[in-house]
Length: 232
Image 1 (tube, one colour):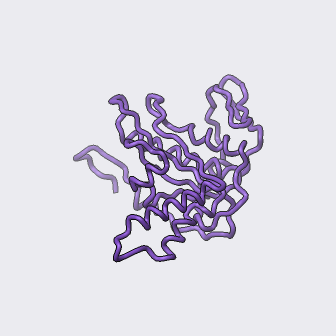
Image 2 (tube, one colour):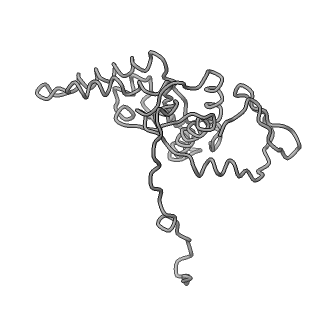
Image 3 (cartoon, one colour):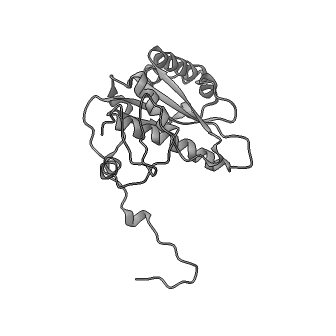
């Protein structure tokens, strides 16, 4: 599903929503049926990072993607997340630094092999753009911490959806750099912050098969009050 430079959406007061360089009008959108959007959601899928290649988003497209990523549920409007963009030579520089962490922390009698070190050097080297979504909870008793973490996850997923809507493929991954103190310090995270995910954005180098999805009968239950008779 492609997004044009100008997208018109029906509004309650008859105004127009214009998408232009990532800046949106502020009126309330009327929730009218959008079958194309539903079809897009029913068919979206993730890609493997190694299957992503150039081209990636332009500067204007990236601004649009990040604007959409920031448009998520955020109780009390405290913005408990932020984004780090990793592109160009920064990708290999980060990979080299992660490989050095692995080498430095390995036991003397069990050093990492060449394959492991090369894996770390290439970790961010496939997609032309990687966005680290940082969960940055605010120290407040107005919003539970878990709600803030969920908001960061929503931002990561909106980022994926926006990139997909522009025709790019995405991979939302974490792995050890998202929880390792040294890697987090390397990325400039503060003590209370965490990586909600690294979102790799690029063009699919080859077709990838879809995977099985859960059956709704296995994951959906209708709640009823304790002691209430269950319908057969």
